[in-house]
Length: 327
Image 1 (spheres, rainbow, N blue to C red):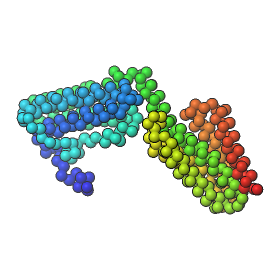
Image 2 (cartoon, one colour):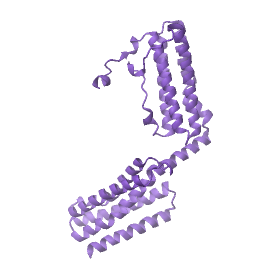
Image 3 (cartoon, rainbow, N blue to C red):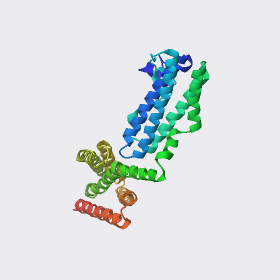
Image 4 (cartoon, rainbow, N blue to C red):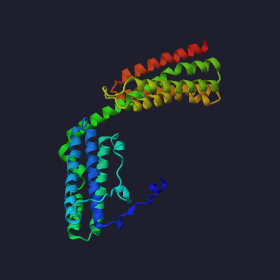
C-alpha cells in the first residue's frame, strides 16, 4: 500500500516508448469516454440537456481512440499493449465517478474541463517526444484540437444548454438542495430549538443550578438529535418523493436538531445563574429569528406568517417550561 502511494513500481513518462505512449493514449481515451457516459447517465433524468453534452464528449473521445488505434495498427500490429494511467508516475489522474456524481451539474462540468486540460498537456508532451512523423503529427493534431477549440465542455454547453436551460437546471438543483438539506435541517432546527425550551428552562428554574441545567440541556439536545435523525431516515427512502438520500437528510435533521437545543443550553456553562439565564433567553430570540429567516429565504414563507408560527410556538413552550420549573 505504501509502495503504491509513493509511486514505487510505476514507470516515468520519459521512459515510455512510442508504442507505449500510443497504447496509453488509447486506454485513456477509452476511460474518459466511459466517464463522460457515466456523467450523462447521472444527469439525464434531472438535466437532460447537460447529459447531451457528455454524450457528445464521449463520442469525440471515441473518435480520438479510433484514430489512435488506426495508427497503432499501422505501426505495431493488432495487439495493443496493456498500459493504463495508473501504471505511469505523475500521469493525469481521474477522480472516481461516484465522487463526482453526487456533485452539482456545474461541478461536473468543471471536472470535465479539468480532464480536458490534462489531456491537452499529455498530447502536447507526447508529441514533443515522438520521433515517428505520423505519430508526432497525430499527437500534435490532437493537442492542437484541444488548444484551439478550448474547453469542449464549455463549447458544447453553448449548443445544448442556452441561458434558459441553465436557469431551469439551476432551479431544479436549488429545489433538490432544499428537499435534501434545507427542509430536513429546518425541521431539525425548529424541533431542537423549540422542544428543548421546556426541559431546559424547567430544570433551570426548578434547581437554580447551572451545571445541572446544562446536563439536562445536553441530554435533551443529543437525544432529540438522534431521535429526529433516525426518524427522518426511516420516514422516506427518497426514491418516489425525490427528496434525496435518506442518510443525507437524516444527518441534516439530526445535526441541526442538536444545534438548536445546544444554543440555549451552552450558556448554563456559566456559573452565575442570572447571567446564564439572561444569555440563554437572548439566544432563544436569536434562534427563533434565524428559523423565521430560513423559512422566508428558502421556503418562501411570508415574514409575518413565519414569525407568527415560530414565535407563538416558542413562546408557548418557553412559558410551559417556566411554569413547570417554578411550580
